[in-house]
Image 1 (cartoon, helix red, strand yellow):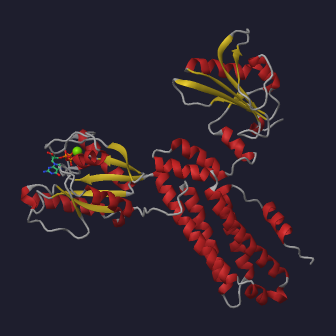
Image 2: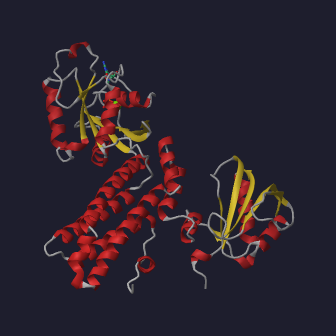
Image 3: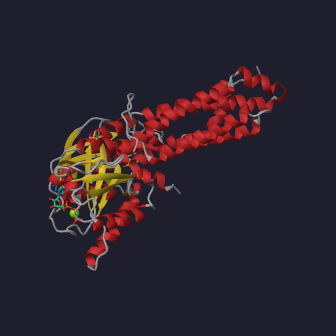
Length: 460
Ligand SMILES: Nc1nc2c(ncn2[C@@H]2O[C@H](COP(=O)(O)OP(=O)(O)OP(=O)(O)O)[C@@H](O)[C@H]2O)c(=O)[nH]1
Ligand SMILES: [Mg+2]
């Protein structure tokens, strides 16, 4: 029996809804000529667009469009692929898809699962794992900068860098494994090859790559920012000012916002998911109480909390008491994630209020101080432009690089020990190699053996 990964699959490849063109895609390890015959009524030249009617089981035209056949292995998935480009109405495409599923019963085509075409491309070596992920990222990209960096990852920039690091790791592993096999030459071997220097350089390169990937992850996933504070401090006004649109209702009535309201904006291409929340206070109002509970959930879930204060009320007894209470509860949040914001700097009565250390003064009403806030937000999450360009990445890549670095660091410690613990060093390098291989999905034990034998001839 064939595994699921060898079933012929079909799906509508374009977004749901109406469009000028819609595409139904079929991918199959088996030859598709009988399917092509049934639907197109003729044979197709490989990779050449042919305009023709798509036929129903009764021989009537479902639609007219372009048919394209990509015989294996020169296709997106590496299998035989048929693409039917029809008019982009949902009904037409559903009919065409249904026709593909039943036109050749012997093929047993089934509906594709999400991402299955790309998974096959990976399984057939058309893309590595990081590139396959980049396909999804490119589709999902919410800002131009994110799309650019996903495109770069798709082109293999991340995989290329990872590949270079992997080669360096393999060289080190070969060296150590060989030294283990010839214990009498142990010390010389490592010294001659400058194993410590190599390990240190590897750590430096891992740091640089980790930094670029972390920036890429920020670009892909964005930053969760929450506006929090007492009622009436201007949280909704600040959301509107940052978004440049009247999204949230603003009134002088405390407790105007009762539910969380989120909007994604971008600063220098970095997506920021900003949430306005209900003002934090004790209340008898059932609806507002639920809103306040949601505010706290959002605060705990945020990358950055903007804790807003109202300069027109700073120093007033009731106001300060409430603020102190909120500060107390915020103690559970990592202080590095909290930014103190003093709002309403435009109001006439605030002239005498001293600037607070490390806090930002601004006015949601006039926009004064907003640019400084934008820069602080980027700085807060460690965003900085990387001259050599970013690629995706995902949190998964950042974590895999972090673990790789940990193991290389431990390997360095073992190598530097007197006497050097070579077996432990070898083990750390093996784990570093595994962790790195997770990024591209490339690592297998056979790989290592192959590399060793192709580069290292022990009999010589
Ligand atoms: N002068 C001045 N007034 C402001 C500023 N920002 C907000 N306000 C006023 O403060 C009042 C409350 O503003 P909101 O944005 O609704 O405050 P909020 O924090 O969302 O309040 P709740 O939703 O009730 O928690 C409104 O009357 C705003 O016009 C500012 O920068 N300067
Ligand atoms: Mg509000």
